[in-house]
Length: 184
Image (cartoon, rainbow, N blue to C red; front, side):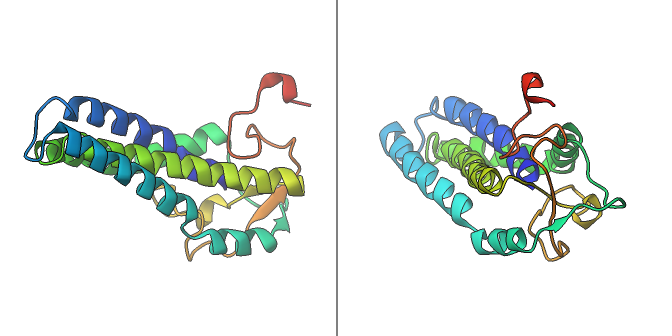
């Protein structure tokens, strides 16, 4: 589950950093200083909102974790990340374009908001990773319960989570890539 949450963190972060870097070039309507200060506030608010949103649903799903069965369809980390990014590529590109366009009003603010959303997703994945590490189980969402774009790991289609041992699969707790030395 943390892999799906974390899949959007890196693209949002990098699109946000690029949009903020390019967006600081035009002076904008409000000026660079106000734009960057507003962007810093939007970064913090966006990161906090995304990191804290739906934690109750995630915790409820984690409490009802069932052992992964023989017929549960679980997929590798790389496939999950690729599916999520392919399914959301137009949303990411349009968010990048909006962040760049907003630079003419508030320089760098839109890009910093995107970077904050990516940071919030990474914080939420880290929270899930600490939970997985404490319970010594990896939490998985069945592939057929995700939406058609490969997202929404806590959506209403998700009826429960599946759990495996921490050595299963190619993902470490928190959705990070498992290092080869850790494989058993």
